[in-house]
Length: 436
Image (cartoon, rainbow, N blue to C red):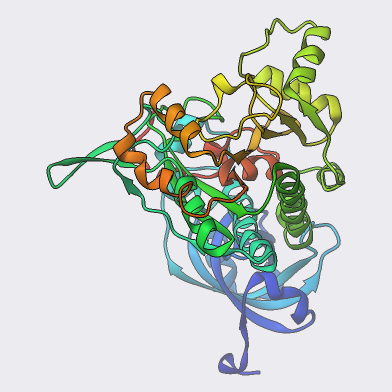
């Protein structure tokens, strides 16, 4: 076979070429060996596998080239694909030729352990490594699965503005910018705009970046993240919860189907992950959650929001994602629907993930009463002028409706089992030199 007849493939397709000679373009991740054999750990953006160069089987110059390769050198390797039962990937290459494309010297992220701060400074290079590779592949699956799920459920995607004139939820954690002499803010949520869309299309979702002016000091805080926010007309809270748990199970199942290799690279317990697809998820009222926490020696009183220890205990107690329903009105947003028999709680739910990942979904049924919402906006010290358009939705054919929001990065950490999204995904904020 001449060089022009040798097929060029990607590593991920090696299973289809067992016993054949192929060429692969990639990068050298690591190298080990002796005077007679060199083991090249290779990557090409689709997968990782090993190329084996045996001195006795190749021209001397090829073996010398292989011996001198430095970490992250780009190269073409040619050779025969073999099955390899010792590796999790299952295949390797018996290399017959090595051609250097681009040399690499003194690559800073060596095989030794590196601290988080160091990796922050090298985010542009850290993308090449196993943990971000596997995590971002899973993130991509979650994104594709989100579109698939909502499309098959009959939703329309809308795009909410990223620059807004006010805070959608009244918070002060906003990035302010000058908009031709007027104040504008980077959006925290697309939810209120999605409500307008639901009154036009019935079921809509937004999917875009959101911004919070708070330091990314824990895995619960990111200054920039991506939110999926569905809104559904003619849907009460119970129907919304059923949709939410179907959505979560759908996402997890897609990752289990499509990212087996990546889950192995991250050493994620797939059986445990699969257990989180068993529906329905438990539903526990805020009142009962408080009692459960108090009975287990938590110093919490009715009316407080839950922190990480409380959320972790509750989800782990049920060994499952769990809905905590009907929180106190004073700690929730103004638009949440009043409870029919109590004035102190609203019809809402947070979905808490086990293993310490906390809230992955927050949602509620939305109140439809014009006068009530107007009073709540005033109580919260918000500008009626800024919310007149929102109140209009209650004047012209309002209907019962519900919605929720899922933070993509929080979902990624949960599915991948990673400790901190900033380590797993190098670019939650694209300017890699900006750090908290």
